[in-house]
Image 1 (cartoon, rainbow, N blue to C red):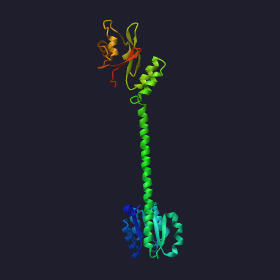
Image 2 (cartoon, helix red, strand yellow; image 1 turned 135 degrees about the vertical axis):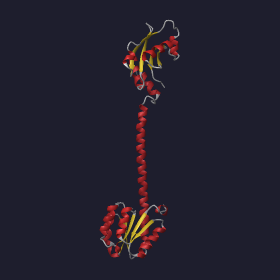
Image 3 (cartoon, rainbow, N blue to C red; image 1 turned 90 degrees about the vertical axis):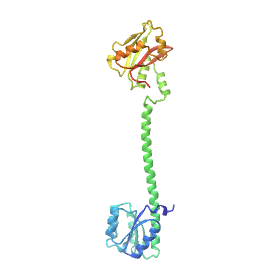
Image 4 (cartoon, rainbow, N blue to C red; image 1 turned 90 degrees about the horizontal axis):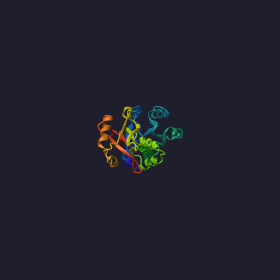
Length: 285
């Protein structure tokens, strides 16, 4: 990874009253494409940090007029994600070891002639680490989001699969085949088309009459006394039903009985004989 490619997305604040050191570090970081601000007053640093927390803070502790631990506490109180680098007189380096638990990611001797370079290299390592962390967090967020979308889609799909409108025909047919009686078959039919209103008219061959014997989601007065005798004069009555045509006289009777404008029907045929009719006043897809 070339850190220069991502450095412009990272902010670094430098605190130092040593003009030569502060400017040297700032220019080195600027040359690496970082966004850098240099502060000589710690109150100005804290004010800006509270408004816009940086990713890294570089502290020249020889310039501090407050204890180091106070500065750490103030920074971490604003943002506990900040990474802190220390530039210190050599005599204080040993005492700074305990600050590694408080987001201190490196301490460098102020007397080292290459301190600016070492600090900048440390910034590169921190930046690369943060970038990979943010990438992983982004990937995790995407994964969690996609996982939720998948779970939501699965729930919707299961509901749709349970819907009679899209359930596979093989499943629906197998449910019909498992029926032990004509009554059970009708119950399955009502369940398969539960949003429809239905009246089942059973055909009694001995008296050549259709009689209401079952219904689903229809007013009771629709089925009270509902029956229709096939006219003896209409020799092609059953042939019309076989062809999917409701004879005109039968349709007229049902429309008047239900006080509706249309009648739809599905014949129930067993062994090439009309067993009965499923009647609906709604459109059937």
